[in-house]
Length: 110
Image 1 (cartoon, rainbow, N blue to C red):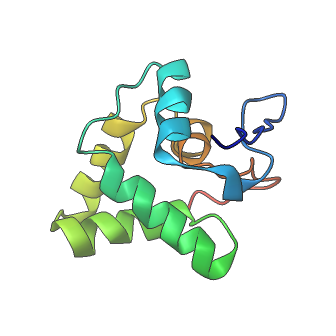
Image 2 (image 1 turned 135 degrees about the vertical axis):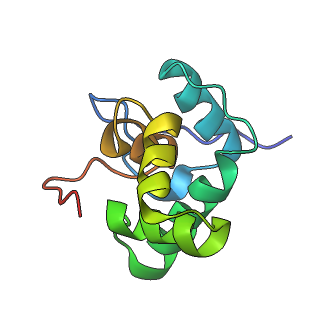
């Protein structure tokens, strides 16, 4: 049996090292945010992870909206509303945290 890896969080509950992320951690973080991760969340979370792995930066909210438009066929306004419905307390506060991103120092809302 392997030894469990200790995962560190900052004072706001964001992962210190995004490489520590997995779906179990996402589920635990979502529960703390009052979100029950169902199948509507996972495509976005996996998109955010893939974007981060490729670029080593958090995808700006405009990239997330583009993801919903291009991958899920939503109109831009509907995509923004869908994001808000999934994460009512905000993209940075909830989506970035649950996807295992570090808290951004500065943020553009796109």
